[in-house]
Length: 397
Image 1 (tube, helix red, strand yellow):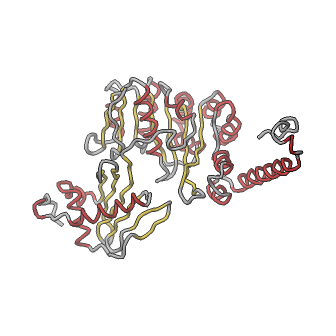
Image 2: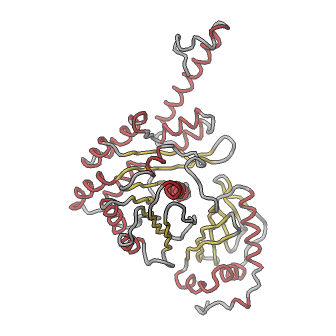
Image 3: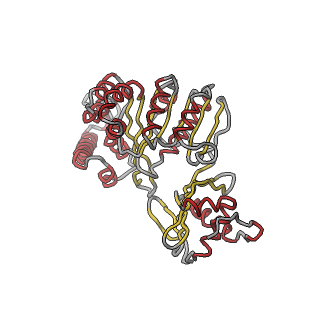
């Protein structure tokens, strides 16, 4: 394969038209990802499951042609690096984050759906405490979870709120840029790694000289980026970023563990000071065959700060659980139980997604037993008491 630039005049863009058809089909079915792989059929991820969209096999030449039609002058970059990130705009309502790469049978690509309409905390059904985290003027807020759990969408809802409610300068550093923000009350500068910046760490260092109030770092991938982000939070900026960790406890342990042993006490002091919140997400299947986010929320308080400083991360889940009423924190199990109580998810889905199957099973059993008891007592009430005397006999819902 030559590294020479693609001659656009020789392309028919027939493969591009086929791609647009499949992307439209993905959107119609509320899918999240389109999988295009040489040597097999086009497939989409619908409600978490991979389904076939056709019986047509993508040939090796067609895979290369599609890559050339999509990348044009950037095609030699794919040949050289063997993978490339970029965004693709389907229409005024949808864009896609794309990773294209070579595999043993030819070219493959995965297209992740990005709605052009910016999400809000309310539209995502996220806990209201996230709005309060957006109103902070300094510190570090981390959104965590596995790939594909909606971290980028949650961050977008937070940046959207800040943009609509505060007069600040926001800098985003992303790979690639996904959601596009128009200046509202804020000035928003968005930088894409590769196109506008060399690396996360380099762009983050530069951002500190660009009069920012809020800095979004798409991902804290290395030690240098983590340390620079913490320094930015210490010096009076609000820093938002992501990590691929499962919950708040693991997030704190991962950050501290990335540093050499001789540095860990210093990092514990810094992290306990700057960390304002951790939003950990997992997607769970709903009863209507969709998916929703179960969210663990850690909010900084004196107890959390002491646990980080003293290296007692193992006690963090209990601190989160016990802070629900005062600090509006919640564990995954509390989030799952709330979704179950709202009849949005099934008992099986809650158990499957939980951190501890034993703990969530006990909580669900207790909830079901309590609900059954209250319903039984309602039936036993004399007709005239049902609406007036519930509080007297302890049946207030």
